[in-house]
Amino acid sequence: MKNFFEIKTFEDDFEIYHLPQARVIGKEVRNGGSIGNTAPDLWNDVFA
Image 1 (cartoon, rainbow, N blue to C red):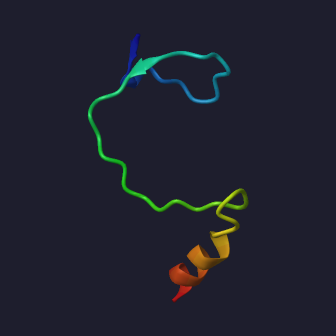
Image 2 (image 1 turned 135 degrees about the horizontal axis):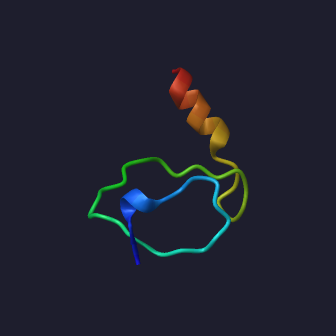
Image 3 (image 1 turned 90 degrees about the horizontal axis):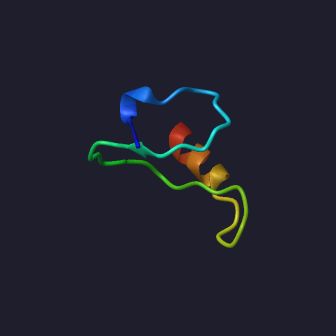
């Protein structure tokens, strides 16, 4: 298992990395699927 700082961009190999404890804060947006297209609502909120 490799450390977080060994991650390389644009690599096609499958590897497992050990990531430090972190909190991800964001907003889920979908362009289809079971909950539909929520992207337009996001942009309306951004521009409001």
